[in-house]
Image (cartoon, rainbow, N blue to C red; front, side, top):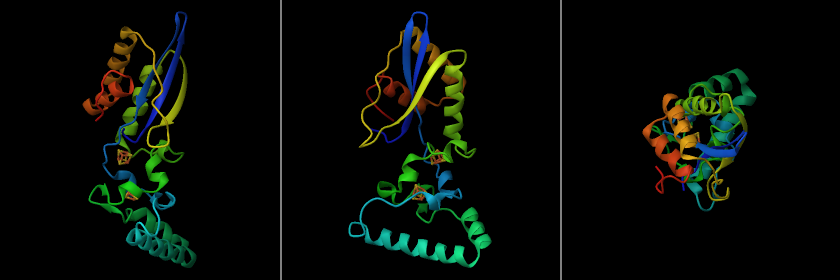
Length: 192
Ligand code: SF4
Ligand code: SF4
């Protein structure tokens, strides 16, 4: 199961309700790991015993940044604004399996949903607006992953589904996002 968030959309009309799931697909570009809130992403997973090197690095980093902040707040601000997360290697997270909770949730965080830097989020928002336009809609966000339960069941006619796809494609949905959309709506057994 892919680890991501998705929007469950429920539409009401005179003939009764229907619903779809709209998943978010991270393209692992690493841009969010260069943003200035990477340091507030929370504690990493695992234990000091299971990941001694990473834990030591995190501890040293926090001590160094804490010292910098106490000595000169402006310097600290400059530092976090102009330095990527130290665990970013090329465009990949080197501690992906134990990355902090904030990183796991991103961009579905208060700060993340406002960011202009995440391309797939931009498409996700465009798609959401396109399928909702002119309809009475209730929406709830959900997360997949080990502790987050199963994907919400959906209900639609073929025509409703095809209309959604057309709108999402017009909003720029990529082939991988389309495959994931099909999976989240029970149309495809394989994930991306
Ligand atoms: S900026 Fe968006 S697409 Fe890029 S790694 Fe972060 S969440 Fe994924
Ligand atoms: S811990 Fe990993 S996912 Fe989180 S900001 Fe750093 S490189 Fe990105």
